[in-house]
Image (cartoon, rainbow, N blue to C red; front, side, top):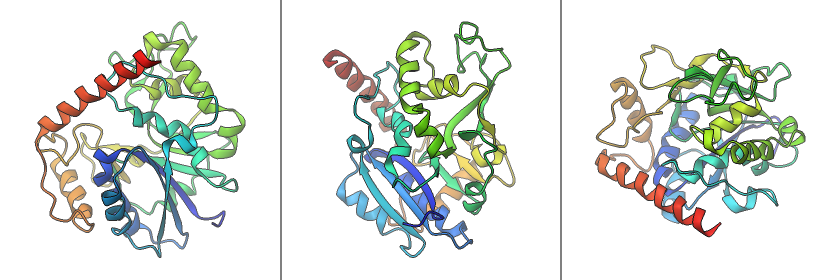
Length: 295
């Protein structure tokens, strides 16, 4: 492992393994600079079959894939809080991304798996954080007073309604500062302390901890697929994923997703019924209820 390698971290369960393949292929095909890419996957139950398909979807000359079981990267004394939303618990694993890396890695790019990269990822990797611990892009709601998201108790926390609110799906992270500041614990403690106000799970906690202390990146580095754009750097399929028939974001972005997917071991995949998505959300809630009872 070389310190100048680009380090990218994702987290996924088996359901979203197919998305990793398209993401990896998009990174590979658009990466033209000389840095090697170390791609770290926090594994929340991905099958051996899908792991093999992911590994065989990209060139090992460009990208090295590293696997980590989720339990191995959660520091001792920490645990994932259980909320009442339909979001999978996998989403919390990004909080532990810095702990999935070798000790000499000083920064990382965290990507949600429902993304594809349209530019050379080295451009994001080499962005100056200007002393901040993280760089991110404004969320759809933009500010903490967003009625459907944001930070509902922003007044109690001493924040102005115009305080900017970022989307946690793409983050450029200074690993050294993250670990020194014990950010993972800070976010988890915040989620537990303000549990009744938590919206959009760990994104709430991250925005509380980093309020007014994060670097705003060009929005093209996290362009939401619901909106048109002629030159996005990263497309983020925030809403219904393009693997479902019920996909409802920009059609050209669905075509882009399948352009990359059809160059992987999932070539020829056809969108599945949206009913599966609904059942999975219901299943996520049931699992959380069980976990909450056991805790």
